Image 1 (cartoon, rainbow, N blue to C red):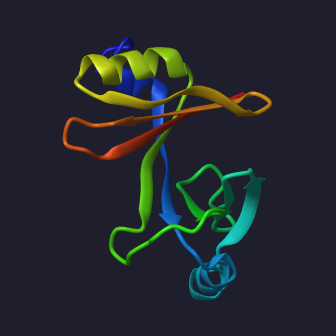
Image 2 (tube, rainbow, N blue to C red):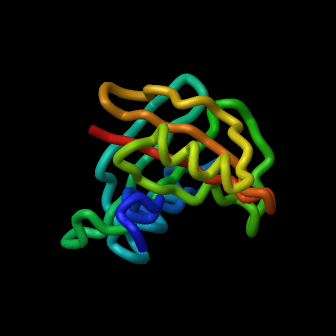
Length: 133
């Protein structure tokens, strides 16, 4: 792997699960596995809790997302995008697009210093890029 490869600038960061029952989902992940809420985004379109296991700081996050507009969420397909934290969201997106990805959401600042964008792989898998800081 070279210093200019995309893998040098990204970290597999999170998995998202969509739910229509945030309270129930939080209770399950807390009681079953010991997750706690690290951060919350309460946006007009969704409520999102970022969960972590205490003592695993910097590890993979589990994110629970509840749309604020009624949506059909079926078991087995109720997952969100595969998430990557990157140091340069523009360059990482350019690499993904050059490899055949298709952008579905422009780079957007969702909180001070936090930029996200969405794309789809050629096989149809949703990917979220996040640059924080």
